[in-house]
Length: 467
Image (cartoon, rainbow, N blue to C red; front, side, top):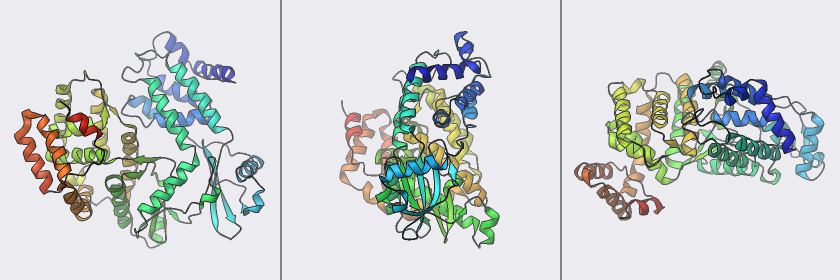
């Protein structure tokens, strides 16, 4: 099978003229290369569409032209025939469908590159959604990515000079393998529900563990209004600005307090029902450990304080880079970026613009964002886009600042006064001796403002203070 599929892949690349461009060494300079790559991926089917969509989120690695073209890939595919769907469900249940479900609607609610969803009813009368994976998908993705990694080693370095393409594709392979095991999604739904169980405005569907398998997921059906159906929401009596503020505050909590956030919060995954915002589709989730959250907090703090060195430290904490990286050049780029925003009214500050500028700094200086930061970047752009539509008059920075003061200040202060944390932070600051006075002043300011968090994983700090 691999030989035949390899010929199909090479044939698709050849049919759009991509192979000849690479062979002639002209792919890097030809402006049609990104479009031809997208066309080839479309020809190669659902697995390549999914791979292309993931690549399109890596704006920290790939030129804008590639990101723009690959983002056009659509995951809507022809629905599977009903008999194949019913057989797949039966196989996962290890028994007749009628023994578990009173009814399954033949027409799918959605048909994507990974799975198809159908509305159904349990024997107890509860309305649910069945998410059933496309047949043989794990085997197809394993084969396609293995072949693509092989082929990527033959791509001229001049085409994508800043990218280790085989390494990126290997990361995608590992990420996709996790995503298409629906047991991981079920666990994410359970964890998200637990973290938001006390919330009066955020919810998620209940998942049915007894029906969960690697290839099938069953969850409650949410009968709600899509978050971007504005007129319908207004007619139902909802305040759009209130929804926007609750959505943004939830996302801030997910990122900075929980360290566990929805990685694909586009409008199709957000519904309003019974006064609550329902998040659905937990196939992509972001996880931030305590150290990563501290680094992000430092980036935001340094941004507002116009602190170039603090911003650099935060950036270097969330990226990987070559030891030969020019830190002076990075400092100049960070200084230029901060200067751009220094006179800007925070009321009109766009997080989207800020993230794009940060990513440009990453690309220019050869910095590679961690996979979790890449997920966060995409999710933040989606959330801000929805927020701006729902609450255009709300000052985002003031909203965020008030949340931190009201919800995280006491916790941060308590953690900051932890003796162990103070010593670790002090050693880290003292190691960089040339800036001791400024750093000690910053450290004291952080303690007084409750900005230092406890990091229970001392591995990174141990490495930092080694002499």
